Image 1 (cartoon, rainbow, N blue to C red):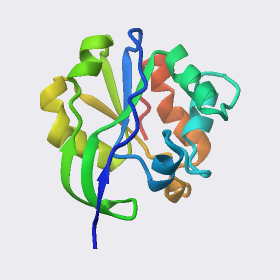
Image 2: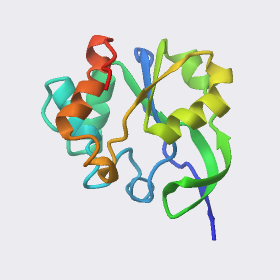
Image 3: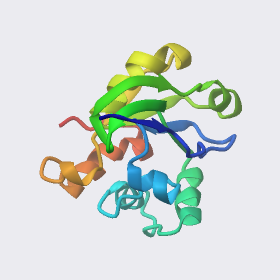
Image 4: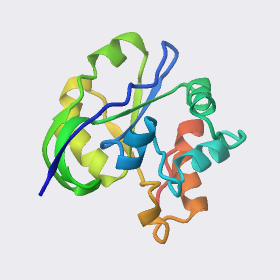
Amino acid sequence: MLDHVTHTLEAIYNNECTMLVLNAIPSPISREKNFYYEHPRDRFWQVLSAVFDEPLPFSTEDKTRLVLKHGIALWNVLESCDMNDGDENSIKKPVAHDFSVILREAPITKIFTVGDKAYKLYNLLAKKQTNIDAIKLPSTSPEYMPRYPLNTLIDFFMVLRTGMVYED
């Protein structure tokens, strides 16, 4: 049985963000902890701290400071969907966020999606709103550890710092 999931996290951005990083929808743990990429084995924050040569952030305040310092906004593609216990492959009835507020208030010029599902959902549901092509980054989820070792993830995410896309 699929559960109806509603995105409850506020977008993180300010009027200096030029990049928007999107996941499909927050994981159950992230929704529970009310912040992005909060699964204890997710490598997102470890990757960003390496990319920007910053200390690993632990508090939500430090994580927010890290992304905003580097012009990165965080959000998710979906406002709601039906899905089975955090399994992105089970998503049904997806509804995209309205990106107009972020795009009106922040000078976003680049959009990045984290994982295949976010990329597919963005292109299907949101690109027509933003008119910005997304750059797909690999998932930082623990289930992809064998495919994407930490150093490989850092290479891919270095595009956030350098603008140069890493080819696998």
